[in-house]
Length: 123
Image 1: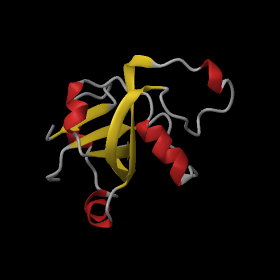
Image 2: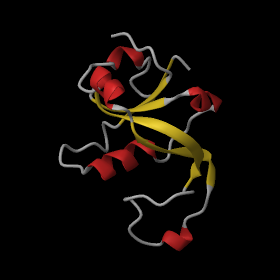
Image 3: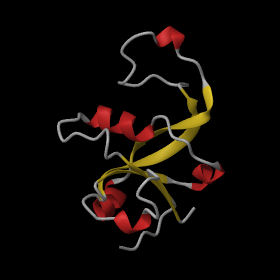
Image 4: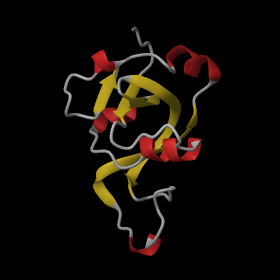
């Protein structure tokens, strides 16, 4: 599989459920990652489950963890502290042309380690 865009892909093997709403999938994909400076050169984020791209997001901005609200925030929103060791992005669903190119495709070869849930592609 060839990927032309600058992408950061996130394995959601522990959090993905086929019954997730689109908003739950977005929050699971965008929230709370230990990522380096290369994150800033990624234009798109992939939600990946068992090697398959489930959704594609266009990244607008990266913020420290807990800077924004999400569907995981059920209680104690006031107690959330900003964490600068982890990051979350804010974005939108990618354009249809980009989504069509990648959703349903197997990108497991881009994950160099089975342990690391993050893969930088063209970043």
